[in-house]
Amino acid sequence: MIKRAIISGGGTGGHIFPALAIANEIKRRNPDAEILFVGAIGKMEMEKVPAAGYKILGLPIAGFQRKLTFSNFILPFKLINSLFKAYKILKNFKPEVVVGVGGYASGPTLRAAIFAGIPTLIQEQNSFPGKTNKILSGKVNTICTAYDGLEKFFPKEKIVETGNPVRSEMIEIKGKKDEAFQFFGLNPSKKTILVIGGSLGARTLNESVLENLGLIEENQVQVLWQCGKFYFEKMKETLSHTKHNGIHLNEFIARMDLAYAAADIIISRAGAISVSELCLIQKPTILVPSPNVAEDHQTKNAMALVNKDAAVLVKDVDAKNNLIAKTVEILGNEAKLKQLSEAIAQLGKPNASRMIVDELEKIKKWAD
Image (cartoon, rainbow, N blue to C red):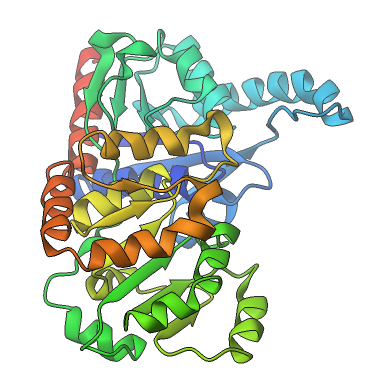
C-alpha cells in the first residue's frame, strides 16, 4: 500500500488526466495516502490539479523554443533551478514513489528522484515517446506504456503495457442513448456523426463540416459537433447564413459520455488519451491526426489502430475534400461499421489505472 507519492508532469490534458486517474486509484486503495503533484509554473496543471482536489507545487521549467529567443538562453538556468527545487520538494515530502507522466516538470522531478534513490515510474501515453522519457528510461524502475513496440525506445525489461488511464465517467455509455438524444436535441431516426477536435477545437475538422453541409443534408445524417472555444462564434455566425438541418453545434461538450452514446461514428484527432477512450467506447472511428504536434506522434498513435483495421485514417491535408464523404460512405456500410467496432474493441485496456498502481506497489516493495 502506498502512503506518500509524488506525481509530476502536465502541460496538456493528455498528461494531466492520466496523472489524476493514477492519483485517484492510489486514493481508492488507501484513502489516507498523501499525494503531491509537481507541475510547471504557468501551465494548465497548476489550475486543473487543485480543481480535482490535490495539492500541487510548481517548478520554473520551460520548453526549448524552435526559434532563436532569449528564453532559450536562460533555459539552462531554469533547468538547474528546477532540479534544486525538485530535490528540495522530495526532501521535504519524503515520497515512497515518484511518477512522471510527461511534460516539462516531469524531467527535473524524475532526475531528482533517481539521484535520491526513490523508486520511479514513467507513464508514457503515446506510441512515440517524448525526449525526456527516452532520456530517463534507462534510469527509472518501470515504464508503463499504452502501445506495443516501444522496446525500440525503452529498455525492454522495464516495459509493462498497461494502456492509458482514462476518466471512467467519460466511457460509461451503456443504456444512455435515449438520454443522449434528448440532452442534445438529436433526431432518433437519423444516424449521428460525432465530431470532436479537442476543447480548443481543430480548424481542419471545423472547415470539413462547413464545406460539406450539402452532403450532410443530402444523406439525411446529423452532426453533433464540438468546434472549440476559438472557433465557436465564427462557426455560429457562418451557420446562421446557411440552410442546414441536423447540425448541432457546441463550443464544448461537458457530457462526453452522452456524446459517445449518441454517436454512430466518431471523427476525432488522434491524441493518446482520446485514442484510449475511443478504444473503450468501441464505436467506428475516423482519425484525423493533427500535423501540428511534436514528432508527428498523432499519426503514429492513429497508425497503431489503422494497422489493425480498428480505425480509418484521413490525413489532415485531405480532410476538407474527403472526410465527410468517407464518413457518410462508412455510415452506409453496416458490415464496415460492425468490423470497425469489433476491431477497436479488441484494443481497449479498461484496467490501466489499476495495473499502473500495481506496478508502483511492486517497485515500492523492491525498495523496502
